[in-house]
Image (cartoon, rainbow over all chains, first blue to last red; front, side, top):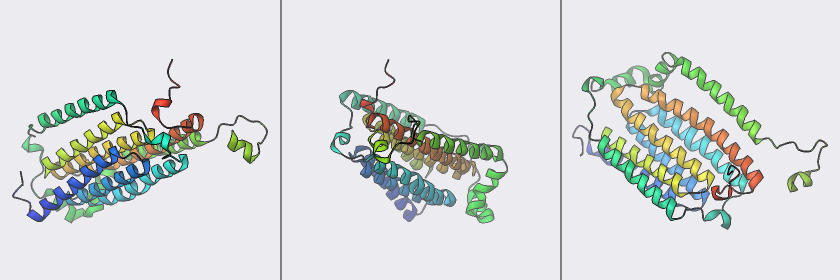
Length: 194
Length: 97
C-alpha cells in the first residue's frame, strides 16, 4: 500500500508516528492511574503533531503542541492533582462484563464501518491539483495558509468562537465558585470541614 | 498517505469510544472525548492536503471548542466532586428517579 510518489524515508516515519500514536492511545485507555493515562494522552498528541508536520500543516502542529499537549492537558493534570485521584478506591474503574461487551461490539461495528467507507472513492474534481498545497505554502507561509481563510471567509465563525470562549470562562468561574450557604463569614477550618 | 491517515484517525476514534465505554472515572472519560476530537482533527488535516486549507481552519475551531469544553467540563467535575467526594460515575446517581 506504499505510495510510490512518497520517498521511503517519509513513509517510514509516517508509519512510525502512526504506530506510536495508536500504541499510546491503547496504553492511555488501559492505564489505571489517571496521571499515567493523561501522560500517555500527551504522547498521542505529540505523535499527532509530528503527523501534522508531515501532512504540511505546520501551524496546526505548533498549535497542537501548545494548546492541546500544553494547555488543555495541564488543566486535566491540575484537576487530577486537585481532586487527589489515584487512591485505591478510585483505581479500579474498569467496567464489568456488560460495559466491556458493549465496548467490543461498538468497536467492531465502527471498524466494519471504516472497512466499508475506505472502499469509497471521491470525485476527482474535488481534489486539488497535485502540488497545490506546496504552492500555497511557498506563497503564503505556514501561518498565512490558515489565517487567510480564517479572517476572510470564516470571519463570522471566528468572532462567534470568541463569544463561545467568553461563555466558557464565565461558566467555569460560576461553576467553580463555592456555594454560599453561610450568610456570616465562616472561619477557614469550618469552611474546609464543610 | 491519505488512506493511512484516515485509517489511523478512525482507529484512534474507535479507541476513544471504547475508552468511554469501559471506564468509570469521569476525568478519564473526558480525556477519551479529547482523544476522539484529536482523531477527527487528524482526518481534517489529512483531507486538507487534498481539498484545500479549509480543513486546517476547521481544526482551529475544533481546538477552540475543545478548550472551552475542557474548562466547563472540568469545572462541573470539580463541583460534583465537592458534593459526592468521588468522580467514579458508578457512585454518581443524583439524576436517578
